[in-house]
Length: 242
Image 1 (cartoon, rainbow, N blue to C red):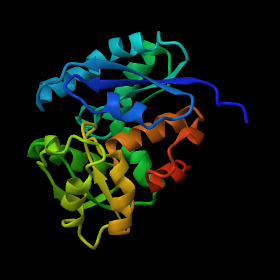
Image 2 (tube, helix red, strand yellow):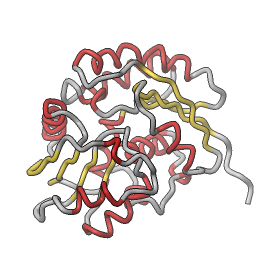
Image 3 (tube, rainbow, N blue to C red):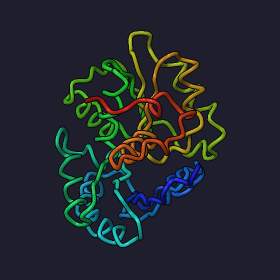
């Protein structure tokens, strides 16, 4: 069998993010190269999240220079749901106009992933401050999801080794209520991709995370879903909803 053709994916990350640049290449996806650029972010303030949209254009323009780059994502959840429904699309438009390439955002990818999995009632878990977490709930409810449960403020830096996923899984499994049909764990600064499948097995429901949703939608956007690591989660075996 001949090797799959090489493709590049561009990721714009918050400047304090220390996860995506290591976690995505570590997956070893055949023929996939990841190119990264950063936008300023040192605190969870409205001003810095809003500035990401403006700065993403220049970051995307430079990412488009990398050979064989096929699509670009803003890899920040809060930076793409900040102003509610439609904000993620406006951020993607900034990226597309600057780069000439298809663009996705993490928040938009999460919505697409939850719909693909048929989730309607979900529990949300975040490391954010309360005001950011409440905006996330409003964004998802604006897309028609019901959110009967949210737990916020988890210390994401308490677990910084990808294969050490038990603390995060315990945090979720011990709190997820029985009346939800799926879980969303927010923030692209969680190093936790290999913990998704064990958590899904434990709680018997689908789990979506910011990083996995972003990767899933990027690859589907360019018709490269065959590169997805199907052992990581149910989502990797699920196409976008029509």
